[in-house]
Length: 272
Ligand code: ATR
Image 1 (tube, rainbow, N blue to C red):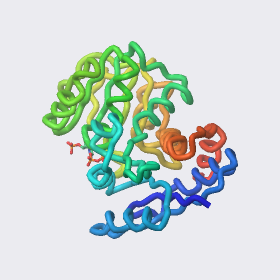
Image 2: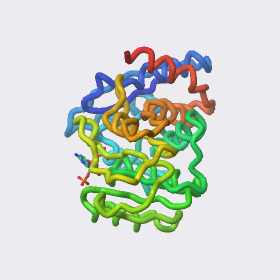
Image 3: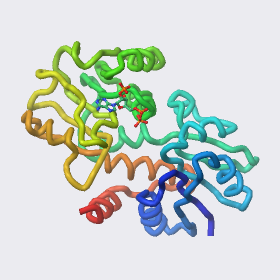
Image 4: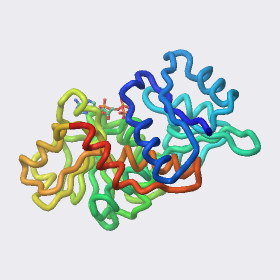
């Protein structure tokens, strides 16, 4: 059986083993997928010995995505810009490759699973950390009218806007100075992990706005609840993004893309 794993710290609550087991069953692949806990100072050793012992591919989660980026001998263009790697594999020539599938996973979830159009729309993305950097290129490739990055620390949003300027219309803003209405608002801050809300001014969303939280939880996230209290009809969380990024990694490794709908429903049902 071909061996795969997710590496993180902590990693015990990762849903990746369940998701990839469902994909393997559905597409009839002879493989195993486990969770590997790496010590905070021992990521590279765990990766090296995994591949030395014949492992085929790895997913990387918190806090190792940057180290995985550094460790990859070759990277895809989207991983290069994202500054993070969530998928590692060894090519037939023995070269360690790194990719990031988070961005394409988010875009697929937004457009295909939720039927939300990005092309031509005014998009606001909240936050300017690693999570947001990881999705900007695939987001801009949908040709939105414009993307505004709003962040508590303005300089971080400005750095990201500069980095991705060649991919489309993108600008930085603080929360206080946000102006105008947006068709799609994406929360990429880690604020909701503490049940916190980014300070979004009035008038930024309307009833017709679509709202997407990159986080997910069994209950509606604080951000989704806030959006619904503002009258927004469609506010969704990022559980589908988790399954879609996994499907993209699976396709890289196995050459077959699993159907995600049934797996999203399975993972959702197991959460409540
Ligand atoms: P991640 O990898 O999840 O993106 P990160 O790189 O630490 O984590 O980035 C966290 C993001 O959430 C940042 O944009 C951060 O804002 P700052 O850059 O100003 O620190 C944002 N964030 C975290 N807590 C927040 C809060 N309570 N309100 C608003 N933004 C918050």
